[in-house]
Structures are given as structure tokens and as C-alpha cells.
Image 1 (spheres, protein in one colour):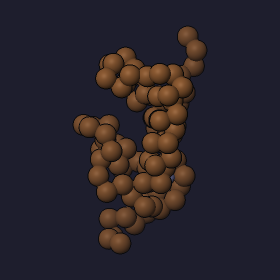
Image 2 (cartoon, rainbow, N blue to C red):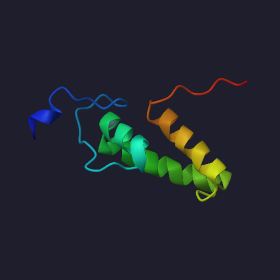
Image 3 (cartoon, protein in one colour):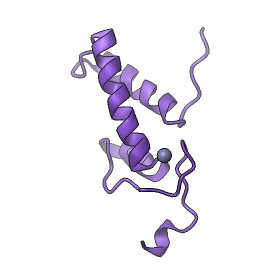
Image 4 (spheres, helix red, strand yellow):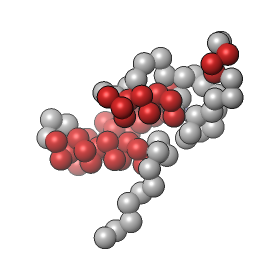
Length: 86
Ligand SMILES: [Zn+2]
């Protein structure tokens, strides 16, 4: 373990690791995710993501669907408060 992990805690489960070894999402969001959550929480999200895609029949190639999925992901991982109904 390197010193760069000192003091790090997952935003979701508060464990000190394991860290994600790569950004799990493209662009800035991926970097934020890698900094914020541990590999175990990311794995949990991947399981949840599959359920959500199946349940709501999401098409990840549809920009509206992939945006909704990204929002669900951020809520699940504790990076965003659930949106209050308008
Ligand atoms: Zn975690």
C-alpha cells in the first residue's frame, strides 16, 4: 500500500479500500468516481445497474437512458442527493 492511500475512505461505505485501479467511467465523472468510492461499492453498483437496466428496459445507447442511469449511479454511490419530485 502506498502513502497516497493514507486517510482515504470510500464515500459510500467509509472503508479504506480497496481502491478502484482505473476510472470506471469516461471523462471527469470517471475520475470523480475513482476518487470517491471503493472497488467493492463499484461492484455492488454493477450488480444494481444490471437490475435497473433489465427492470426499466434501459438502452444504454440512448442518451436519455444513459443520463438517467448515471444519475442513479451517483445516488447509489452517495455522490448525489436523490432528486426531490418537481
Ligand atoms: Zn465502498
